[in-house]
Length: 112
Length: 141
Image 1 (cartoon, rainbow over the protein chains, first blue to last red):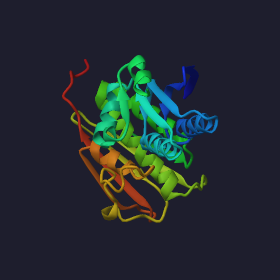
Image 2: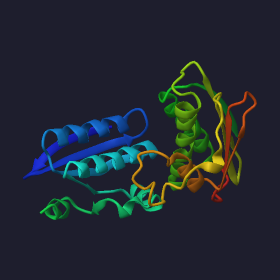
Image 3: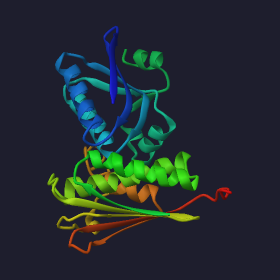
Image 4: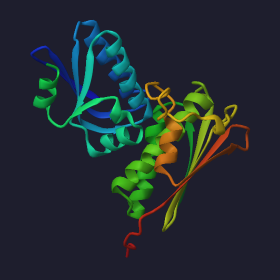
């Protein structure tokens, strides 16, 4: 998995590409989110547009990151989901947990 | 077409198993969403064998068998662990489980394959058998 990190105002945008799978991308995802939260980010947007596969460990890390952010008073939102990742969130019913957006501008705006 | 793999109990082995199945699917003309979801189920089965069956003991091996027929694919994954009771797997969609970071692997397998069974393997570990019907496709000349 590869990542690009940038800020749009006070929103930390983490753009990911490749796979979020067990033993590789899942650990990296956890570290990236934790680093952002520990650096004081309270608005984190995960851009999943470049993700080609996500397994149950990857989904698990996303859920853990969501909880971790919430416990710190921060928000974690998702943007640019492929149809397959959207399908995964639908079948696991996690679509009811995450705030999901189709485009970055709309997502950044939603943080207020 | 069929293939058998004996893999080291490391997460890197999942990529090897995935490539082997992609090769078989390539020969059989299987791709797209069908390939994607079957590979997803395969990854979960092997990850469970490594993480839960062997608890990180890389010296144990994971055996994977593929059989690709005209209308169906069968995958068997066997570990050398202690086995488990598949009847007591909680539903990760239940409200009390929704925010748990783990417990979705078997759900993925059952969701993306038509049939998933768990039984004792020949060496005492878990044998996972997964089947899925394939979409009819043009026969290669």
